[in-house]
Length: 279
Image (tube, rainbow, N blue to C red; front, side):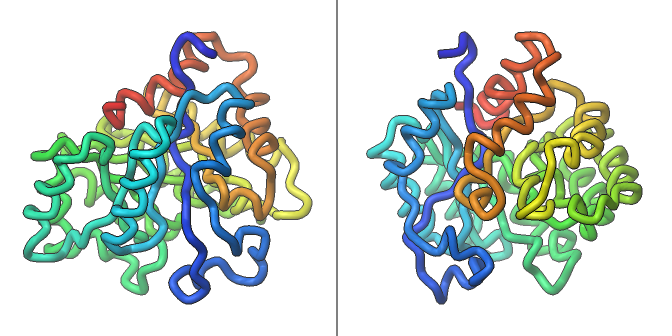
């Protein structure tokens, strides 16, 4: 095992429900099934990872119960990014409740799926975000590239709140479009409380014919703008399976970071996630 424990900072579990999980369409039939800790544990060990952070995919507090139960049974689950209704009047009460669970580390909302692309700037949503720091909770920002223009205003309102961008904000890798995304990410990286997960890239590429080199221009932008201290590895397993096995997904970043120092690799593959999520 590595001297610094390697942590997969972004993965999911679910008991598949075709109605609730309608985002998993027939094109994604390979993941239209249940995924539990037992399905991931061996994969992590085989690839040198000591643990993972499980992230919500369903927007309900039932999801939190499911993940907390799994985390009780599976030692390798080091942290949970759950869901609460950040716009609810009772949000502070719910955050206080979840602060009693040591493995609950932060929260996320599926902003990428909202018809209101600037929902994160609504007063009620901002009020909820403003309460996270009180309980030492982080916030995962799940957006598509078109929503990046709203994020500087969003994060600048909370200079002491820890944020992390999921899946490098889902740029148009399949079409090789990079210019506006690059500009937006460079602006966002100026906020020192904002981190970035290098995760989920294969799902934004051509699922059948991507090449490792397709990701390098995007990786260059993230590493050059956020620096080695504010990036972390996430597999996005099992969603990544629509385009790549766990090993192939990991292989992209292993090859890219192969010339980096041992300390830099330790930070990217584990140290930064451990610090960010208080693992």
